[in-house]
Amino acid sequence: MACGYTSCTVRRCQQRQPLAEHNLLPRHASITDDTSLLVLRSTPTFQHESSQIGGSSAGGNLAAAVTLRCRDEGGPRLRFQLLEVPALDLTRETARATLASGVLPDVPQPTMDDATSSYLEDPAQARDPLASPLLAEDLSALPPAHVMTAEYDVLRTEGERYAERLVAAGVPATHRRYPGALHGTAMLTRTWDQSRQWQRDAAQALRRAHWATAEPDAPGLVSSA
Image 1 (cartoon, rainbow, N blue to C red):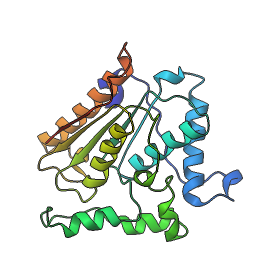
Image 2: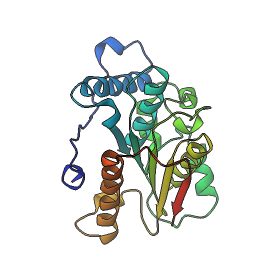
Image 3: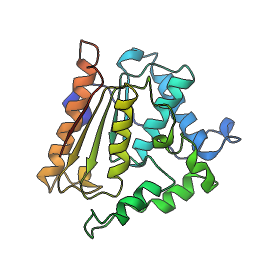
Image 4: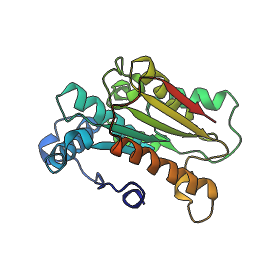
């Protein structure tokens, strides 16, 4: 879908096992290391400034972490990041506060505890910015971003706060919360118009960022419900 709507080449990263040479790293760091390596290996084929990164849910976590590594370790200058219903605080403190606030109806929510325990060897590692990008002290000099959140998703606050913090750090960022949407809305394109609109909007954000001839707009958060 992304290829057709954006006229871009898409590289997909599916992490199964950390690379052997990174086994001495914490698990979450080795996974971001492997993904960063994929970005570096891909960019000789394409211009660095044309490369974008994105992900949904746990993939959004990984994408955000890789942008931090690229910035801090001299990686490619990524043009854009697209974060869909991202999980950005693996301490789960933000999600628990959202649940406790009573703003969400009684609908199924993503079960992140098992995923988090598989990703982190020690719960204390959740405070590492590579595990929880929302907790990074410095979000300046990161790629422009578009963050998509769902009204009925327990992770919505994480994405929205991240977009706000990007703007505060001087990074051009936009955000849209989709009314009535769930965490898995983007996967329901055969049955739900809302899902098809979500996919079109994601593709449009990528296309706009990829084919823009001018520099990104000045920092400013555009948020719509």
